[in-house]
Length: 104
Image 1 (cartoon, helix red, strand yellow):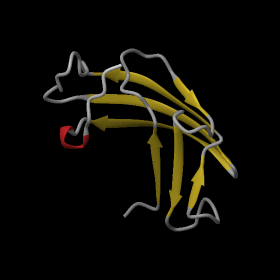
Image 2: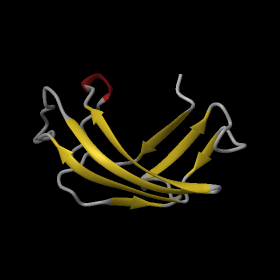
Image 3: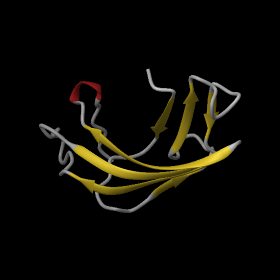
Image 4: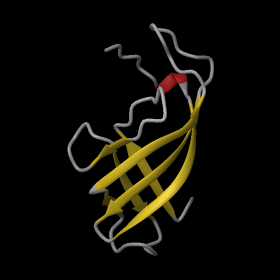
């Protein structure tokens, strides 16, 4: 198990490199840091007060009701927490079994 874990949520599948930002409002991009060993915070969970998700690269995404066979996104994140801030780079792969396609 890692010493820390960061969960990002309410981020839409990127279609370009436009940053997605949020603060603390439900539905906006946000993050929660989990500190399993207590080396970064006295709290197990810390929620972002500011969060920016910036896509760097991605494979083509779902269009017109069809899921891609595979998908990835590489991204940068910047977040401010109650007791500090973090900046990082991540890479995520698409997992079709956990996806629900919502067309707007």
